[in-house]
Image (spheres, rainbow over the protein chains, first blue to last red):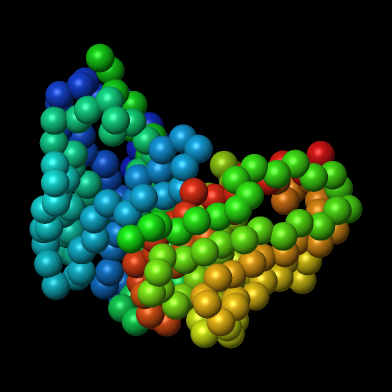
Length: 114
Length: 113
């Protein structure tokens, strides 16, 4: 069945290091992917998205990589800061589909070591 | 632009009561979706509204209902509350009917005692 999962439920990184959060998806028809950040007590915040016609997209300190061959998505955070502590989850959908078709991953908790 | 707003932010109810949650989307966004988030189940889709019409509904019992007003603001109602309804209820808005990118509000944390 369709699924969006995360390889690691928790990730601990040293402040200043780069963080890599992974996500696997199983539906090859998905062509739009989003990463969200959810801090404690807050709603999910849109970070970055990527469409299937791209392999890489960069934002401010974040990069999303898409490998369609192995159905893998990753979020790279450069120079991780304490404010990056949060749960990160990916979402997959198909273009022009409704919100009911969006599949959200379960999330990875990122903690930062001083 | 102001983001998605939700009221109230926190709510405590007892079993059997009913509750109404409110959501105001980002200005100009016409589509509103509701989600239930729990530690065990993650984000679960409740409903999607566009132009005052419910477009889709998730696998939730009929106790969960909602509506959208002409100004795109939305409400959801849960009747006959059960302990298992304790969760963070998130509202998200998107620009068009086919709302790929959901912009979430802060959520309403509901505790049912």
